[in-house]
Length: 423
Image 1 (cartoon, rainbow, N blue to C red):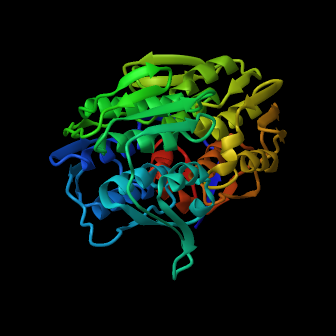
Image 2 (cartoon, rainbow, N blue to C red):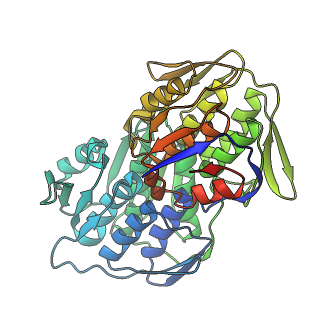
């Protein structure tokens, strides 16, 4: 589906949607209990549906009542390996591989879009020497499938820290379920620390104990029981970043529902915008970024890669050169976000380039627009193009806006409610 987005002034207060990253983790913890958990403030999306399907496939009951998600854990049937459809959610896939090995002796994971191309060798190299069968294939509908089977055993687990933190989180969820005690060590340098801390927080809140042996090294007792922890999901800094960056570009948008005390790595958007010259203000409506004299800066994206595309837009309209470092993992998302972000900015009249794992952006006074942008089946690219359209001289047609369903189905409705023009 294509939409034409026109230059427009955005203004108003937006309630931050629930954190997708936190929701994944809280849903999994809830599904691993034998009790009922209520998660308020839930926002349905394709990624949330993927995690719900996997929980149901492993015996849990999941239902939605208004903006609340109700989950009751259960015992998976072990007559045959369950089939777990992960959609296009990398978090879902990587979280559930070790969980399925613990609970059901494995599973067949179905993957759509480019998910089947996302790296999984970390788990393969970890589990196959321990006796787990690993087979990649293609289903009858041409969707990629990964089948793992075998018993996950307690022991010593070591992971490199320069890969996705999702592998670390997957093991952290599973190891407490094993019969014996285990150790997990993540070797430096460790990326996406905020996401690991978010997982640890969810585990602690669910009654899971572990001993910290040193930085990113834990002893995790086995035979633990997850306990239900109901509550309201936090607002998402990753999605809020889009509107906070809008403020830095001259719009008047405040975002409510964001916690000042959070493990979300994407809260870094506040310090990055300040580094570019925007003014961050907190008021009774929430948090807002106010336009200032934007100047180029060097921004480290290692721990917050999801907000790199929208920050790149602000950099494109800042004076001088900006460099976004540590963007290598952007190549392994729903699309190659590093290349796609640079391509979109240049199509709009910007001046950006890829240098190794960095994005180098030379500021321009104004973006032209008047082009058709391919959303690359990536929600982040669609949001980038939509926000860019508001500050272009001419409208921008965006192809494939349905990609927003992955994380924020209501984005265009929120965009229009703030004054955005969609045709």
